[in-house]
Image 1 (tube, rainbow, N blue to C red):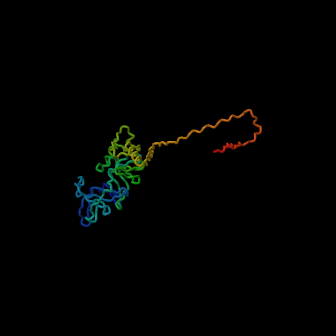
Image 2 (cartoon, one colour):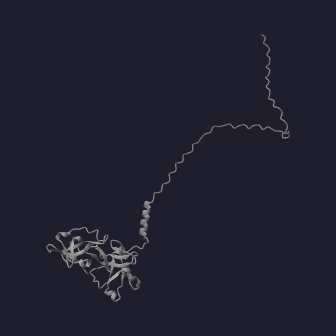
Image 3 (cartoon, rainbow, N blue to C red):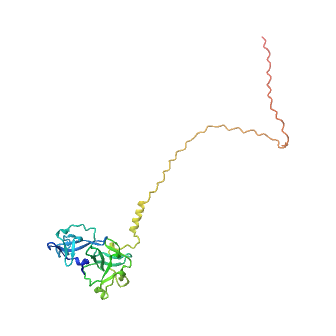
Amino acid sequence: MKVTAQVCFRSALIDSQVITRDRGRRLGVVSQVWCDVDAWQVVALDIKDSLVNNYLPGEPSHSLRWEHVRQVGDVVLVDDDQVLEELDLSPYTRLVGIEVITETGEFLGKVRDFEFDLAEGRISHLVIDSLGVPRIPARLLSTYELSVEEVVSVGADKLIVFEGAEERLRQLTRGWLESIGIGKPPWERDEDRNYLPTPVSVENRLGSGTPTETERRRVAKTEQVWEEPEEAPAPRPARKPKRRVETAYVEPLEPEPVVDEDVTADVWAEPEPYQPPVNLPQRQPEYEEETN
C-alpha cells in the first residue's frame, strides 16, 4: 500500500519500527492500530518489543498516542522514549475484520484495511474484501474501497451502510479467483444458484424483523409487569340473621251491620227532616213512706 506525506494505510504501519528522534533509540514495532469509530479517527498504536513477538499472542505491549507521532515513512518517528504508556483501549476498536452490511441485511464483505490522513489521523475510506484478513495477499481476493460517509451506524462486530452502497464501491484490485471466473463479489453470489453461501454464526446474524417466540414471551412478561393491578372485588358483607319480631294480638273488628235500603223509593223525593231522638228520663217510682 502507498505511503505519502498526506495519507497512509493501516497496512503500512503494521510491523513498522518506532524510532526516537533525540537518540535514535528503537522502541519496538507497531502491532495494532486503534480507532475511535464515533469520530472516525486513529487514536493510538500498540507497540511490541520485536517483530517475532508481534506474531505471538499474549505478548506484553505498550501504547503510543497518535498525537505523539511526528513522522511516518519507512519508520515511525517520535520525540523520545517517554511517549510509551499504558492506555485503556477498551472504548476503541481495531476496525479490521468487522462485517459490512447494508440496511436490508445484504453482506458486502469485511474490513481488511483503511485509509487516514497523517496530520489528524482522520479515517476517510475503508478497504473491504470477502474475508477481512490482511495477511492474505490482495492479488488472491478482490478488494473494494468504501467511503466512511456511507456508514449509517456502527456496532460491536458490524458496520451498517446505506442501501445500494455496493453500487458506489470502487474496485481496487481484481483477485485471482475472480480472474478465472470462480470468485464473485459477495453481493452478487445470491444470484448464482450453484453458490452455497458461507454459514454465518447466529450471534452475527441480523434479525428478520419477525419477533421470535422468546421475544414474544419477554414482551408479554414486560407488559404483564407494567399492567395496572386489577382491583379486587370488595368482599360481600355477611348476612345477619333476621330477628324474629313478636306482634301484639289485636282483636278483629266486628263488621258493620248492613242496612237494607229501599231500592223502590223515589231517589228524587225530598228527604224527611231529620228528627233527633228524644231521650225522656224515666220516672222514678215513688216509695211509700215507711211507717213504724
